[in-house]
Length: 282
Length: 282
Image (tube, rainbow over all chains, first blue to last red; front, side):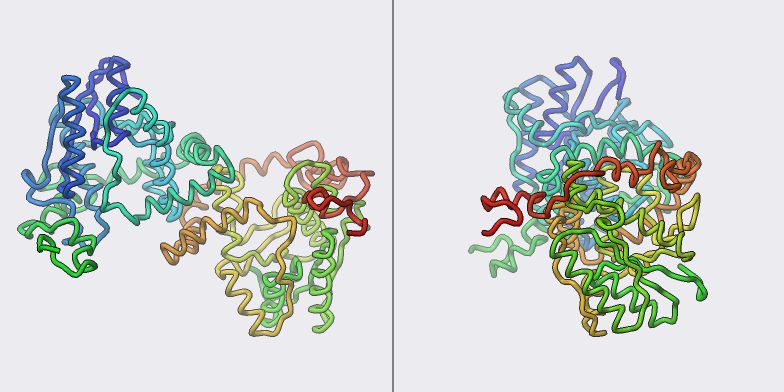
Protein backbone atom coordinates (compact mmCIF):
# COMPACT_ATOMS: atom_id res chain seq x y z
CA UNK A 1 0.00 0.00 0.00
CA UNK A 2 2.89 2.38 0.73
CA UNK A 3 6.62 2.50 1.23
CA UNK A 4 8.44 2.73 4.53
CA UNK A 5 9.57 6.29 3.69
CA UNK A 6 6.20 7.62 2.53
CA UNK A 7 4.71 10.56 4.41
CA UNK A 8 1.14 9.54 5.22
CA UNK A 9 -1.80 11.83 5.91
CA UNK A 10 -4.51 10.08 7.91
CA UNK A 11 -8.06 11.45 7.58
CA UNK A 12 -9.18 11.53 11.21
CA UNK A 13 -12.83 11.84 12.25
CA UNK A 14 -12.45 10.98 15.94
CA UNK A 15 -14.25 7.66 15.39
CA UNK A 16 -12.85 4.16 15.98
CA UNK A 17 -11.68 3.44 12.44
CA UNK A 18 -9.62 6.55 11.79
CA UNK A 19 -8.00 6.52 15.24
CA UNK A 20 -7.28 2.78 14.92
CA UNK A 21 -5.57 3.16 11.56
CA UNK A 22 -3.52 6.15 12.75
CA UNK A 23 -2.47 4.18 15.84
CA UNK A 24 -1.65 1.06 13.79
CA UNK A 25 0.46 2.94 11.27
CA UNK A 26 2.48 4.69 13.99
CA UNK A 27 2.90 1.40 15.80
CA UNK A 28 4.27 -0.12 12.59
CA UNK A 29 6.79 2.71 12.33
CA UNK A 30 5.26 4.82 9.59
CA UNK A 31 5.42 8.61 9.51
CA UNK A 32 1.77 9.66 9.73
CA UNK A 33 0.18 13.03 10.44
CA UNK A 34 -3.55 13.52 10.99
CA UNK A 35 -6.09 15.73 9.24
CA UNK A 36 -9.31 16.69 11.00
CA UNK A 37 -12.05 18.51 9.09
CA UNK A 38 -14.56 20.54 11.14
CA UNK A 39 -17.90 19.80 9.46
CA UNK A 40 -20.06 21.96 11.76
CA UNK A 41 -22.49 19.17 12.66
CA UNK A 42 -23.45 20.64 16.07
CA UNK A 43 -22.50 18.79 19.25
CA UNK A 44 -21.44 15.78 17.21
CA UNK A 45 -18.65 17.69 15.49
CA UNK A 46 -17.56 19.37 18.71
CA UNK A 47 -17.20 16.02 20.44
CA UNK A 48 -15.44 14.42 17.46
CA UNK A 49 -12.87 17.25 17.37
CA UNK A 50 -12.13 16.68 21.04
CA UNK A 51 -11.49 12.95 20.50
CA UNK A 52 -9.16 13.68 17.57
CA UNK A 53 -7.28 16.46 19.42
CA UNK A 54 -6.92 14.44 22.61
CA UNK A 55 -5.58 11.42 20.70
CA UNK A 56 -2.98 13.58 18.95
CA UNK A 57 -2.04 15.60 22.04
CA UNK A 58 -1.55 12.54 24.26
CA UNK A 59 0.84 11.04 21.71
CA UNK A 60 2.57 14.26 20.59
CA UNK A 61 1.27 13.89 17.01
CA UNK A 62 0.75 16.53 14.38
CA UNK A 63 -2.97 17.09 13.66
CA UNK A 64 -3.84 19.49 10.84
CA UNK A 65 -7.25 21.10 11.29
CA UNK A 66 -9.48 22.56 8.59
CA UNK A 67 -12.81 24.19 9.44
CA UNK A 68 -15.50 24.31 6.76
CA UNK A 69 -17.14 27.28 8.49
CA UNK A 70 -14.02 29.33 9.22
CA UNK A 71 -12.24 28.72 5.94
CA UNK A 72 -15.05 28.18 3.45
CA UNK A 73 -18.05 29.94 5.02
CA UNK A 74 -20.42 26.98 5.22
CA UNK A 75 -21.01 23.76 7.14
CA UNK A 76 -22.67 20.42 6.36
CA UNK A 77 -26.17 21.26 7.68
CA UNK A 78 -26.22 24.50 5.65
CA UNK A 79 -24.95 22.73 2.53
CA UNK A 80 -27.62 20.04 2.94
CA UNK A 81 -30.32 22.68 3.23
CA UNK A 82 -29.00 24.69 0.25
CA UNK A 83 -28.60 21.68 -2.04
CA UNK A 84 -31.79 19.92 -0.86
CA UNK A 85 -29.84 16.68 -1.01
CA UNK A 86 -28.96 14.19 1.74
CA UNK A 87 -26.30 15.68 4.07
CA UNK A 88 -23.88 12.81 3.32
CA UNK A 89 -23.63 14.02 -0.26
CA UNK A 90 -22.11 17.48 0.42
CA UNK A 91 -20.22 16.11 3.43
CA UNK A 92 -18.52 13.41 1.38
CA UNK A 93 -17.58 15.67 -1.49
CA UNK A 94 -16.23 18.38 0.86
CA UNK A 95 -14.10 15.84 2.72
CA UNK A 96 -12.71 14.23 -0.42
CA UNK A 97 -11.74 17.62 -1.82
CA UNK A 98 -10.10 18.79 1.39
CA UNK A 99 -8.25 15.51 1.93
CA UNK A 100 -6.77 15.79 -1.55
CA UNK A 101 -5.91 19.48 -1.15
CA UNK A 102 -4.23 19.01 2.24
CA UNK A 103 -2.18 16.08 0.94
CA UNK A 104 -0.99 17.95 -2.12
CA UNK A 105 -0.37 21.23 -0.19
CA UNK A 106 1.54 19.42 2.55
CA UNK A 107 3.60 17.23 0.22
CA UNK A 108 2.18 13.98 1.58
CA UNK A 109 2.60 10.80 -0.48
CA UNK A 110 -0.64 9.06 0.48
CA UNK A 111 -4.04 9.94 1.95
CA UNK A 112 -5.01 7.14 4.34
CA UNK A 113 -8.62 6.61 5.39
CA UNK A 114 -10.02 4.25 8.01
CA UNK A 115 -12.68 2.61 5.80
CA UNK A 116 -13.35 -0.88 7.14
CA UNK A 117 -14.84 -3.97 5.51
CA UNK A 118 -18.39 -3.03 6.50
CA UNK A 119 -17.97 0.41 4.92
CA UNK A 120 -16.44 -0.89 1.74
CA UNK A 121 -18.96 -3.72 1.33
CA UNK A 122 -21.86 -1.28 1.84
CA UNK A 123 -20.47 1.23 -0.69
CA UNK A 124 -19.82 -1.61 -3.12
CA UNK A 125 -23.37 -2.84 -2.64
CA UNK A 126 -24.72 0.67 -3.41
CA UNK A 127 -22.58 0.94 -6.52
CA UNK A 128 -23.56 -2.57 -7.66
CA UNK A 129 -27.26 -1.83 -7.09
CA UNK A 130 -26.97 0.93 -9.69
CA UNK A 131 -24.20 -0.80 -11.69
CA UNK A 132 -22.37 2.48 -11.64
CA UNK A 133 -19.40 1.19 -13.60
CA UNK A 134 -17.31 4.34 -13.14
CA UNK A 135 -17.65 4.21 -9.33
CA UNK A 136 -17.17 0.44 -9.25
CA UNK A 137 -13.93 0.73 -11.21
CA UNK A 138 -12.55 3.18 -8.64
CA UNK A 139 -13.48 1.22 -5.52
CA UNK A 140 -10.06 -0.20 -4.79
CA UNK A 141 -8.02 -0.55 -1.57
CA UNK A 142 -5.30 1.56 -3.20
CA UNK A 143 -5.80 4.25 -5.83
CA UNK A 144 -2.51 5.39 -7.34
CA UNK A 145 -1.83 9.13 -7.69
CA UNK A 146 -3.05 10.33 -11.09
CA UNK A 147 -4.05 13.48 -12.92
CA UNK A 148 -3.65 15.80 -9.93
CA UNK A 149 -5.20 13.42 -7.35
CA UNK A 150 -2.97 12.12 -4.55
CA UNK A 151 -2.54 8.40 -3.90
CA UNK A 152 -5.16 6.94 -1.53
CA UNK A 153 -5.12 3.83 0.63
CA UNK A 154 -7.56 2.00 2.91
CA UNK A 155 -5.43 -0.29 5.12
CA UNK A 156 -8.38 -1.51 7.26
CA UNK A 157 -10.49 -2.76 4.37
CA UNK A 158 -10.16 -6.39 5.52
CA UNK A 159 -11.32 -5.68 9.10
CA UNK A 160 -14.92 -5.49 10.27
CA UNK A 161 -16.12 -2.58 12.37
CA UNK A 162 -16.27 -4.86 15.39
CA UNK A 163 -12.59 -5.61 14.89
CA UNK A 164 -11.55 -1.95 14.67
CA UNK A 165 -13.62 -1.20 17.76
CA UNK A 166 -11.91 -4.10 19.53
CA UNK A 167 -8.50 -2.70 18.55
CA UNK A 168 -9.39 0.65 20.12
CA UNK A 169 -10.54 -1.02 23.32
CA UNK A 170 -7.42 -3.19 23.55
CA UNK A 171 -5.19 -0.17 22.91
CA UNK A 172 -7.08 2.13 25.27
CA UNK A 173 -8.06 4.55 22.52
CA UNK A 174 -10.94 6.84 23.45
CA UNK A 175 -13.14 7.35 20.40
CA UNK A 176 -16.50 8.82 19.51
CA UNK A 177 -19.04 6.00 19.75
CA UNK A 178 -22.04 8.08 18.69
CA UNK A 179 -23.00 7.88 14.99
CA UNK A 180 -23.36 11.08 12.98
CA UNK A 181 -26.92 12.36 13.58
CA UNK A 182 -27.19 13.46 9.95
CA UNK A 183 -26.48 9.93 8.65
CA UNK A 184 -29.57 8.45 10.33
CA UNK A 185 -31.70 6.65 7.74
CA UNK A 186 -29.23 7.10 4.89
CA UNK A 187 -28.84 4.47 2.19
CA UNK A 188 -25.38 3.44 3.39
CA UNK A 189 -26.97 2.22 6.64
CA UNK A 190 -29.72 0.42 4.69
CA UNK A 191 -27.05 -1.38 2.65
CA UNK A 192 -25.12 -2.29 5.81
CA UNK A 193 -28.28 -3.76 7.33
CA UNK A 194 -29.01 -5.78 4.18
CA UNK A 195 -25.48 -7.18 4.11
CA UNK A 196 -25.62 -7.96 7.82
CA UNK A 197 -28.79 -9.98 7.20
CA UNK A 198 -26.98 -11.93 4.46
CA UNK A 199 -23.94 -12.40 6.72
CA UNK A 200 -26.11 -13.91 9.47
CA UNK A 201 -27.39 -16.53 6.97
CA UNK A 202 -24.03 -17.08 5.23
CA UNK A 203 -21.10 -16.21 7.50
CA UNK A 204 -18.21 -14.91 5.40
CA UNK A 205 -20.47 -13.57 2.65
CA UNK A 206 -19.55 -9.94 3.37
CA UNK A 207 -15.81 -10.34 3.06
CA UNK A 208 -16.22 -12.62 0.02
CA UNK A 209 -18.38 -9.91 -1.56
CA UNK A 210 -15.75 -7.21 -1.16
CA UNK A 211 -12.57 -9.23 -1.59
CA UNK A 212 -13.83 -11.20 -4.61
CA UNK A 213 -14.78 -7.89 -6.18
CA UNK A 214 -11.26 -6.58 -5.72
CA UNK A 215 -9.73 -9.80 -7.02
CA UNK A 216 -12.07 -10.87 -9.81
CA UNK A 217 -14.18 -7.95 -11.01
CA UNK A 218 -12.11 -4.80 -10.51
CA UNK A 219 -9.42 -5.94 -13.00
CA UNK A 220 -12.12 -6.32 -15.69
CA UNK A 221 -13.22 -2.73 -15.11
CA UNK A 222 -9.77 -1.15 -15.08
CA UNK A 223 -10.04 0.05 -18.68
CA UNK A 224 -13.23 1.98 -17.94
CA UNK A 225 -11.67 4.47 -15.50
CA UNK A 226 -8.61 5.11 -17.57
CA UNK A 227 -10.85 6.20 -20.43
CA UNK A 228 -12.81 8.62 -18.24
CA UNK A 229 -9.66 9.95 -16.51
CA UNK A 230 -8.46 11.32 -19.84
CA UNK A 231 -11.25 13.90 -19.80
CA UNK A 232 -10.17 15.66 -16.59
CA UNK A 233 -9.10 19.34 -16.62
CA UNK A 234 -8.19 21.80 -13.83
CA UNK A 235 -11.04 23.61 -12.06
CA UNK A 236 -10.77 27.34 -12.98
CA UNK A 237 -11.44 28.32 -9.33
CA UNK A 238 -9.16 26.01 -7.35
CA UNK A 239 -7.14 23.98 -9.85
CA UNK A 240 -8.47 20.59 -8.68
CA UNK A 241 -8.99 18.07 -11.50
CA UNK A 242 -12.58 17.90 -12.69
CA UNK A 243 -14.70 16.69 -15.60
CA UNK A 244 -17.07 19.70 -15.30
CA UNK A 245 -16.73 23.48 -15.73
CA UNK A 246 -16.21 23.90 -11.97
CA UNK A 247 -15.13 21.13 -9.61
CA UNK A 248 -17.93 19.76 -7.40
CA UNK A 249 -16.46 21.48 -4.33
CA UNK A 250 -16.35 24.95 -5.91
CA UNK A 251 -19.84 24.40 -7.38
CA UNK A 252 -21.08 23.55 -3.88
CA UNK A 253 -19.39 26.65 -2.39
CA UNK A 254 -21.01 28.88 -5.00
CA UNK A 255 -24.39 27.40 -4.19
CA UNK A 256 -24.01 27.77 -0.41
CA UNK A 257 -22.14 31.12 -0.46
CA UNK A 258 -23.71 33.85 1.69
CA UNK A 259 -26.46 31.64 3.14
CA UNK A 260 -27.11 32.02 6.88
CA UNK A 261 -25.88 28.94 8.74
CA UNK A 262 -28.61 26.51 9.83
CA UNK A 263 -28.45 23.96 12.64
CA UNK A 264 -28.58 20.16 12.52
CA UNK A 265 -32.06 20.21 14.06
CA UNK A 266 -33.43 22.41 11.30
CA UNK A 267 -32.16 20.05 8.61
CA UNK A 268 -33.44 16.95 10.40
CA UNK A 269 -36.85 18.62 10.87
CA UNK A 270 -36.64 18.19 14.63
CA UNK A 271 -37.72 21.76 15.35
CA UNK A 272 -40.90 21.19 13.39
CA UNK A 273 -41.60 17.80 14.91
CA UNK A 274 -41.19 19.19 18.41
CA UNK A 275 -43.36 22.21 17.62
CA UNK A 276 -40.66 24.75 18.40
CA UNK A 277 -37.95 26.62 16.57
CA UNK A 278 -34.27 25.91 16.96
CA UNK A 279 -32.88 27.83 19.91
CA UNK A 280 -36.29 28.74 21.35
CA UNK A 281 -37.13 27.39 24.81
CA UNK A 282 -39.02 24.10 24.88
CA UNK B 1 -36.45 -12.12 -28.19
CA UNK B 2 -37.82 -14.37 -30.94
CA UNK B 3 -39.35 -14.27 -34.39
CA UNK B 4 -43.00 -14.63 -35.23
CA UNK B 5 -42.31 -18.03 -36.84
CA UNK B 6 -40.20 -19.49 -34.03
CA UNK B 7 -41.41 -22.65 -32.33
CA UNK B 8 -41.26 -21.91 -28.59
CA UNK B 9 -40.98 -24.42 -25.75
CA UNK B 10 -42.24 -22.98 -22.47
CA UNK B 11 -40.86 -24.52 -19.28
CA UNK B 12 -44.04 -24.94 -17.21
CA UNK B 13 -44.01 -25.54 -13.46
CA UNK B 14 -47.69 -24.93 -12.76
CA UNK B 15 -46.85 -21.69 -10.92
CA UNK B 16 -47.99 -18.18 -11.83
CA UNK B 17 -44.96 -17.13 -13.86
CA UNK B 18 -44.73 -20.06 -16.26
CA UNK B 19 -48.50 -20.19 -16.86
CA UNK B 20 -48.60 -16.39 -17.34
CA UNK B 21 -45.82 -16.43 -19.92
CA UNK B 22 -47.38 -19.36 -21.81
CA UNK B 23 -50.74 -17.56 -21.80
CA UNK B 24 -49.18 -14.27 -22.92
CA UNK B 25 -47.24 -15.83 -25.77
CA UNK B 26 -50.31 -17.65 -27.09
CA UNK B 27 -52.34 -14.47 -26.75
CA UNK B 28 -49.73 -12.65 -28.83
CA UNK B 29 -50.03 -15.31 -31.54
CA UNK B 30 -46.84 -17.29 -30.97
CA UNK B 31 -46.59 -21.06 -31.46
CA UNK B 32 -45.74 -22.30 -27.97
CA UNK B 33 -45.80 -25.81 -26.51
CA UNK B 34 -45.25 -26.55 -22.83
CA UNK B 35 -42.76 -28.78 -21.02
CA UNK B 36 -43.51 -30.06 -17.54
CA UNK B 37 -40.82 -31.89 -15.56
CA UNK B 38 -41.96 -34.21 -12.78
CA UNK B 39 -39.47 -33.55 -9.99
CA UNK B 40 -40.95 -35.97 -7.47
CA UNK B 41 -41.30 -33.43 -4.67
CA UNK B 42 -44.21 -35.19 -2.93
CA UNK B 43 -47.63 -33.54 -2.82
CA UNK B 44 -46.14 -30.33 -4.16
CA UNK B 45 -45.17 -31.95 -7.46
CA UNK B 46 -48.46 -33.81 -7.75
CA UNK B 47 -50.40 -30.56 -7.36
CA UNK B 48 -48.14 -28.64 -9.74
CA UNK B 49 -48.60 -31.30 -12.45
CA UNK B 50 -52.37 -30.96 -12.10
CA UNK B 51 -52.23 -27.17 -12.57
CA UNK B 52 -50.03 -27.54 -15.66
CA UNK B 53 -52.16 -30.33 -17.18
CA UNK B 54 -55.44 -28.54 -16.50
CA UNK B 55 -54.15 -25.30 -18.04
CA UNK B 56 -53.07 -27.18 -21.19
CA UNK B 57 -56.19 -29.36 -21.44
CA UNK B 58 -58.62 -26.44 -21.04
CA UNK B 59 -56.92 -24.62 -23.92
CA UNK B 60 -56.14 -27.61 -26.13
CA UNK B 61 -52.38 -27.09 -25.84
CA UNK B 62 -49.53 -29.54 -26.23
CA UNK B 63 -47.80 -30.26 -22.93
CA UNK B 64 -44.73 -32.50 -23.04
CA UNK B 65 -44.11 -34.34 -19.78
CA UNK B 66 -40.83 -35.71 -18.50
CA UNK B 67 -40.61 -37.61 -15.21
CA UNK B 68 -37.30 -37.70 -13.37
CA UNK B 69 -38.34 -40.89 -11.57
CA UNK B 70 -39.80 -42.80 -14.53
CA UNK B 71 -37.18 -41.82 -17.06
CA UNK B 72 -34.03 -41.28 -15.01
CA UNK B 73 -34.62 -43.31 -11.85
CA UNK B 74 -34.31 -40.53 -9.28
CA UNK B 75 -36.16 -37.50 -7.94
CA UNK B 76 -35.14 -34.22 -6.31
CA UNK B 77 -35.38 -35.37 -2.66
CA UNK B 78 -33.24 -38.43 -3.41
CA UNK B 79 -30.70 -36.36 -5.35
CA UNK B 80 -30.52 -33.87 -2.47
CA UNK B 81 -29.89 -36.68 -0.01
CA UNK B 82 -27.28 -38.37 -2.24
CA UNK B 83 -25.36 -35.19 -3.01
CA UNK B 84 -25.70 -33.72 0.51
CA UNK B 85 -26.30 -30.36 -1.14
CA UNK B 86 -29.32 -28.04 -1.05
CA UNK B 87 -32.18 -29.55 -3.08
CA UNK B 88 -32.30 -26.48 -5.37
CA UNK B 89 -28.87 -27.42 -6.68
CA UNK B 90 -29.73 -30.81 -8.23
CA UNK B 91 -33.24 -29.57 -9.09
CA UNK B 92 -31.89 -26.61 -11.10
CA UNK B 93 -29.28 -28.60 -12.95
CA UNK B 94 -31.75 -31.40 -13.79
CA UNK B 95 -34.29 -28.90 -15.14
CA UNK B 96 -31.73 -26.98 -17.21
CA UNK B 97 -30.47 -30.20 -18.78
CA UNK B 98 -33.96 -31.51 -19.58
CA UNK B 99 -35.17 -28.15 -20.95
CA UNK B 100 -32.23 -28.11 -23.34
CA UNK B 101 -32.65 -31.76 -24.34
CA UNK B 102 -36.40 -31.43 -24.97
CA UNK B 103 -35.89 -28.30 -27.08
CA UNK B 104 -33.18 -29.88 -29.21
CA UNK B 105 -35.02 -33.24 -29.53
CA UNK B 106 -38.28 -31.51 -30.46
CA UNK B 107 -36.75 -29.06 -32.92
CA UNK B 108 -37.83 -25.99 -30.91
CA UNK B 109 -36.13 -22.65 -31.64
CA UNK B 110 -36.24 -21.19 -28.13
CA UNK B 111 -36.66 -22.38 -24.54
CA UNK B 112 -38.85 -19.81 -22.74
CA UNK B 113 -38.87 -19.58 -18.95
CA UNK B 114 -41.12 -17.50 -16.70
CA UNK B 115 -38.35 -15.87 -14.65
CA UNK B 116 -39.65 -12.54 -13.36
CA UNK B 117 -37.84 -9.43 -12.15
CA UNK B 118 -37.75 -10.65 -8.54
CA UNK B 119 -36.15 -13.93 -9.63
CA UNK B 120 -33.60 -12.31 -11.88
CA UNK B 121 -32.66 -9.63 -9.35
CA UNK B 122 -32.20 -12.25 -6.62
CA UNK B 123 -30.03 -14.48 -8.83
CA UNK B 124 -28.04 -11.43 -9.90
CA UNK B 125 -27.58 -10.47 -6.25
CA UNK B 126 -26.27 -13.95 -5.45
CA UNK B 127 -23.85 -13.88 -8.38
CA UNK B 128 -22.69 -10.36 -7.48
CA UNK B 129 -22.17 -11.36 -3.82
CA UNK B 130 -19.60 -13.90 -5.02
CA UNK B 131 -18.56 -11.86 -8.10
CA UNK B 132 -18.94 -15.03 -10.08
CA UNK B 133 -17.93 -13.43 -13.38
CA UNK B 134 -18.78 -16.47 -15.49
CA UNK B 135 -22.34 -16.65 -14.10
CA UNK B 136 -22.76 -12.87 -14.27
CA UNK B 137 -21.77 -12.83 -17.93
CA UNK B 138 -24.47 -15.39 -18.75
CA UNK B 139 -27.33 -13.72 -16.85
CA UNK B 140 -29.06 -12.15 -19.82
CA UNK B 141 -32.74 -11.92 -20.87
CA UNK B 142 -31.82 -13.74 -24.09
CA UNK B 143 -29.01 -16.25 -24.53
CA UNK B 144 -28.42 -17.07 -28.20
CA UNK B 145 -28.07 -20.72 -29.24
CA UNK B 146 -24.43 -21.75 -29.10
CA UNK B 147 -22.21 -24.82 -28.85
CA UNK B 148 -25.07 -27.30 -28.63
CA UNK B 149 -27.22 -25.23 -26.23
CA UNK B 150 -30.60 -24.01 -27.51
CA UNK B 151 -31.55 -20.31 -27.46
CA UNK B 152 -33.17 -19.20 -24.18
CA UNK B 153 -35.42 -16.25 -23.40
CA UNK B 154 -37.04 -14.75 -20.29
CA UNK B 155 -39.86 -12.52 -21.56
CA UNK B 156 -41.18 -11.63 -18.05
CA UNK B 157 -37.87 -10.30 -16.72
CA UNK B 158 -39.25 -6.75 -16.44
CA UNK B 159 -42.34 -7.78 -14.41
CA UNK B 160 -42.44 -8.28 -10.64
CA UNK B 161 -43.97 -11.41 -9.15
CA UNK B 162 -46.96 -9.35 -8.01
CA UNK B 163 -47.54 -8.36 -11.62
CA UNK B 164 -47.41 -11.92 -12.96
CA UNK B 165 -49.77 -13.01 -10.17
CA UNK B 166 -52.11 -10.14 -11.11
CA UNK B 167 -52.02 -11.26 -14.76
CA UNK B 168 -53.12 -14.76 -13.73
CA UNK B 169 -55.95 -13.40 -11.63
CA UNK B 170 -57.15 -11.08 -14.39
CA UNK B 171 -57.02 -13.90 -16.94
CA UNK B 172 -58.64 -16.47 -14.65
CA UNK B 173 -55.57 -18.74 -14.64
CA UNK B 174 -55.55 -21.27 -11.82
CA UNK B 175 -51.98 -21.68 -10.58
CA UNK B 176 -50.10 -23.29 -7.73
CA UNK B 177 -49.78 -20.64 -5.01
CA UNK B 178 -47.80 -22.82 -2.59
CA UNK B 179 -44.01 -22.41 -2.69
CA UNK B 180 -41.80 -25.45 -3.11
CA UNK B 181 -41.31 -26.99 0.37
CA UNK B 182 -37.70 -27.82 -0.46
CA UNK B 183 -36.85 -24.18 -1.22
CA UNK B 184 -37.68 -23.01 2.33
CA UNK B 185 -34.71 -21.16 3.80
CA UNK B 186 -32.62 -21.25 0.62
CA UNK B 187 -30.31 -18.41 -0.29
CA UNK B 188 -32.45 -17.26 -3.19
CA UNK B 189 -35.19 -16.38 -0.68
CA UNK B 190 -32.67 -14.60 1.57
CA UNK B 191 -31.55 -12.51 -1.40
CA UNK B 192 -35.15 -11.74 -2.33
CA UNK B 193 -35.82 -10.57 1.23
CA UNK B 194 -32.71 -8.36 1.23
CA UNK B 195 -33.71 -6.77 -2.07
CA UNK B 196 -37.28 -6.27 -0.87
CA UNK B 197 -35.91 -4.40 2.17
CA UNK B 198 -33.90 -2.14 -0.18
CA UNK B 199 -36.93 -1.68 -2.44
CA UNK B 200 -39.04 -0.50 0.51
CA UNK B 201 -36.46 2.23 1.25
CA UNK B 202 -35.76 3.09 -2.40
CA UNK B 203 -38.68 2.21 -4.67
CA UNK B 204 -37.40 1.27 -8.12
CA UNK B 205 -34.07 -0.01 -6.79
CA UNK B 206 -34.80 -3.62 -7.75
CA UNK B 207 -35.57 -2.97 -11.40
CA UNK B 208 -32.65 -0.51 -11.66
CA UNK B 209 -30.39 -3.23 -10.23
CA UNK B 210 -31.35 -5.79 -12.85
CA UNK B 211 -31.93 -3.55 -15.87
CA UNK B 212 -28.79 -1.43 -15.34
CA UNK B 213 -26.84 -4.67 -15.10
CA UNK B 214 -28.18 -5.81 -18.46
CA UNK B 215 -27.53 -2.42 -20.02
CA UNK B 216 -24.27 -1.28 -18.46
CA UNK B 217 -22.39 -4.23 -16.97
CA UNK B 218 -23.26 -7.28 -19.07
CA UNK B 219 -21.67 -5.81 -22.24
CA UNK B 220 -18.38 -5.37 -20.35
CA UNK B 221 -18.42 -9.06 -19.40
CA UNK B 222 -19.32 -10.42 -22.85
CA UNK B 223 -15.71 -11.39 -23.65
CA UNK B 224 -15.44 -13.54 -20.51
CA UNK B 225 -18.07 -16.10 -21.55
CA UNK B 226 -16.88 -16.40 -25.12
CA UNK B 227 -13.48 -17.42 -23.84
CA UNK B 228 -14.92 -20.13 -21.59
CA UNK B 229 -17.35 -21.34 -24.23
CA UNK B 230 -14.44 -22.44 -26.41
CA UNK B 231 -13.56 -25.16 -23.89
CA UNK B 232 -16.85 -27.09 -24.20
CA UNK B 233 -16.93 -30.66 -25.49
CA UNK B 234 -19.73 -33.26 -25.79
CA UNK B 235 -20.53 -35.36 -22.71
CA UNK B 236 -19.51 -38.97 -23.52
CA UNK B 237 -22.78 -40.25 -21.95
CA UNK B 238 -25.44 -37.97 -23.41
CA UNK B 239 -23.72 -35.64 -25.87
CA UNK B 240 -24.65 -32.44 -24.02
CA UNK B 241 -21.93 -29.76 -24.10
CA UNK B 242 -19.81 -29.71 -20.96
CA UNK B 243 -16.49 -28.45 -19.64
CA UNK B 244 -15.97 -31.59 -17.51
CA UNK B 245 -15.45 -35.29 -18.24
CA UNK B 246 -19.15 -35.98 -17.76
CA UNK B 247 -21.87 -33.30 -17.94
CA UNK B 248 -23.30 -32.26 -14.56
CA UNK B 249 -26.55 -34.12 -15.25
CA UNK B 250 -24.87 -37.44 -16.05
CA UNK B 251 -22.53 -36.99 -13.08
CA UNK B 252 -25.59 -36.48 -10.85
CA UNK B 253 -27.31 -39.56 -12.33
CA UNK B 254 -24.23 -41.68 -11.65
CA UNK B 255 -24.16 -40.48 -8.06
CA UNK B 256 -27.88 -41.10 -7.45
CA UNK B 257 -28.16 -44.31 -9.51
CA UNK B 258 -29.63 -47.27 -7.65
CA UNK B 259 -30.39 -45.37 -4.44
CA UNK B 260 -33.76 -46.06 -2.84
CA UNK B 261 -36.05 -43.05 -3.26
CA UNK B 262 -36.47 -40.88 -0.16
CA UNK B 263 -39.35 -38.54 0.65
CA UNK B 264 -39.42 -34.75 1.03
CA UNK B 265 -39.95 -35.16 4.78
CA UNK B 266 -36.79 -37.22 5.18
CA UNK B 267 -34.68 -34.59 3.43
CA UNK B 268 -36.24 -31.73 5.40
CA UNK B 269 -35.70 -33.66 8.63
CA UNK B 270 -39.41 -33.57 9.42
CA UNK B 271 -39.62 -37.25 10.21
CA UNK B 272 -36.98 -36.89 12.88
CA UNK B 273 -38.61 -33.78 14.31
CA UNK B 274 -41.99 -35.48 14.41
CA UNK B 275 -40.57 -38.68 15.77
CA UNK B 276 -41.93 -40.89 13.00
CA UNK B 277 -40.81 -42.37 9.72
CA UNK B 278 -42.09 -41.36 6.33
CA UNK B 279 -45.13 -43.41 5.41
CA UNK B 280 -45.73 -44.63 8.95
CA UNK B 281 -48.97 -43.56 10.62
CA UNK B 282 -48.79 -40.43 12.79
